[in-house]
Amino acid sequence: MTKPNVFSGVQPTGNIHLGNYIGAMKQFVDLQDEMNCTYCIVDMHSITLPQDPKQLKETTLDVAALYMAVGIDPAKATIFVQSTVPQHAELSWILTCHSYTGELSRMTQFKDKSRGSESAPTGLFTYPILMAADILLYDTKYVPVGNDQKQHIELTRDLAERFNNRYGETFVMPEYKGITVGARIMALDDPTKKMSKSAENIHSRISLLDEPGKVKKSIMRATTDSDSVIRFDPAGKPGISNLLSIYSVFTGKKIDEIVAQYEGSGYGQFKKDLVEIVNNYLAPIQEKYYDIRQSDELIRVLKEGTEKASAVAERTMKRVREKVGFINI
Ligand code: AMP
Ligand code: TRP
Image (cartoon, protein in one colour):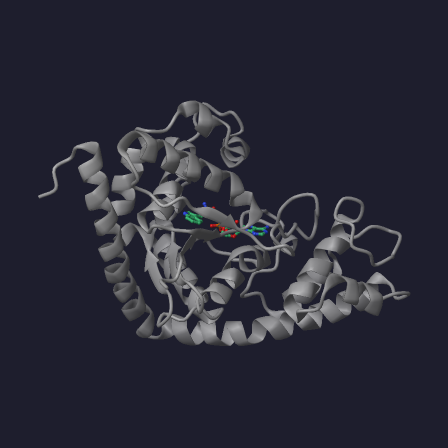
């Protein structure tokens, strides 16, 4: 039996954090043995907001190295950079012509980032179409992402269905693949907001490359409520519930087990233990990261990734061009 196809992407902006890891990248690793996985560094999505070109190049390589450092094995999964496969832009245009401004206006990420401004970049508006193109090019069955991307997957499905209805079966219908614990990791300083790469306060997040001292500070000062009872209740006790999710993912223990373990003890001990757990978890990832980032292997892996991804993407595009009436020569 052929393995189902998996596709996902992460933007090459700095500060890859525990939310990115738990919501997305950890799943990438877990899926690579059972499925046919393709993981992209989506640099074309990053230019929807202004970027420093030199830095973009560096962070693209940083994220590629992090993919490998967290355990994605290029012998099992394809790793490549989006802009090196121009079919993404090509399909994105075709899908743009089959999308409605109304459905794009409803995307909450666009609403958050543009805040109704007339001068919001057009790319920010059409961003989900490029994401749909990424997914549909690879006949993707499952898309492992954090829960903030669920709405974009729904749009991808709508576009695929619309296209298939109009031109006949062309695209595979993709599905969101989430996790139960940690699909939305919250900001440490304000657990009502999601942990994000761009928040000003560096203690709102833990980045995968944070030093132990920084991790300690961020966790010890994480916002929790004042009743000091360790209980999982995301609505009533969002701060401690968020820390419990992180604890659970990094130890493999069930939340109930952890709650039982800390019965009667306050937040102080729990936080101290969590600092150690997180630091021990990140240490080998960081070590591997710095090795890979400096090695020639990284570029070799990305070149090979571009070749493999291009072959699949071109096969899909031949089919799509045929359907819409473009000539294939
Ligand atoms: P991005 O950095 O925006 O490209 O996000 C990369 C991946 O991380 C996507 O699958 C997101 O859904 C996921 N992600 C981002 N922030 C969080 C968060 N706070 N909690 C869980 N997943 C997240
Ligand atoms: N939009 C996603 C994010 O911000 C990143 C992304 C781009 C993506 N293309 C994708 C994720 C395709 C999954 C599949 O997190």
